[in-house]
Image (cartoon, rainbow, N blue to C red; front, side, top):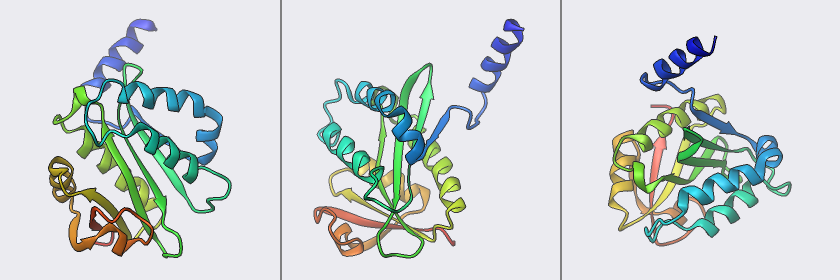
Length: 183
């Protein structure tokens, strides 16, 4: 039995599948918060990227999974060999019917430029369809060219404005991008 399981595990590791993605909703987040924060901290460890703001992501997760935030929110992890490779999180934007925000997409520094960002986003977009999301907005810092290129490759369009113009209260120094789920 162990030999068969080992062979299957090896088979799936070599195939493009979604077995190693972890979908995390509010309930799951609260039940396993310490474990998830630990995985995130390890992924950010030693990353000199100035955009790798661990405290900001922890504060954001605390807010979107809090009792006072009444809208839908979820987090997705890409895990390999018990290591967090990539993560992305989304939340339903207040007062906008079927509009969601992508807060962060982050890949471990040792796994960047290997397609993990695109793969996790493909999986995440399939999940957003289940929520009847019509539009997804994201703000990206102007100097974060790799992220801009990735989002454009996936199908996001620059909105010719800042993120704050799309979703009030968000950082003004981020460029606004929109993904039309109904395309």
